[in-house]
Amino acid sequence: MVGSEIRPCDHPKKDVRRVLEKWAARGWVLRKDGHWGRLYCPCEGRCTVIPVAGTPRNPSAHARVIDRMAARCPLPGEAPNRSLTGMPRAEA
Image (cartoon, rainbow, N blue to C red; front, side):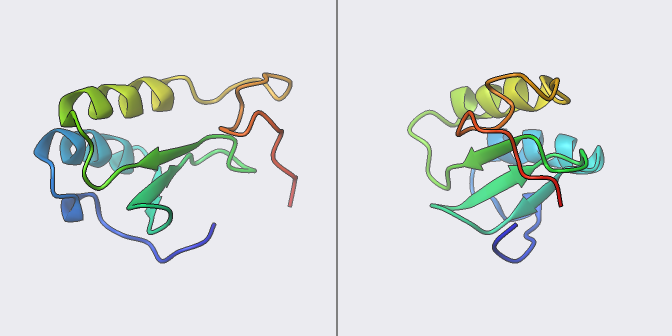
């Protein structure tokens, strides 16, 4: 993981903020990275990384996408969509 940890309440859009708070309560970690941040799953090896835009065009749609992607975790190790790049994460 790259940047420093940030809080879901730091997000400027309330729809996105609600979804981030939901997943942070379930153990997901939000870090400063990319255009605003990335949401990392609590799985060992961090199988799912979700980009979070700071100023999405449609905040409610962006919140739904984040929620949908997070709900799919944990994915089986051989799943091609296990990470956003489609490549399996290296085991640490």
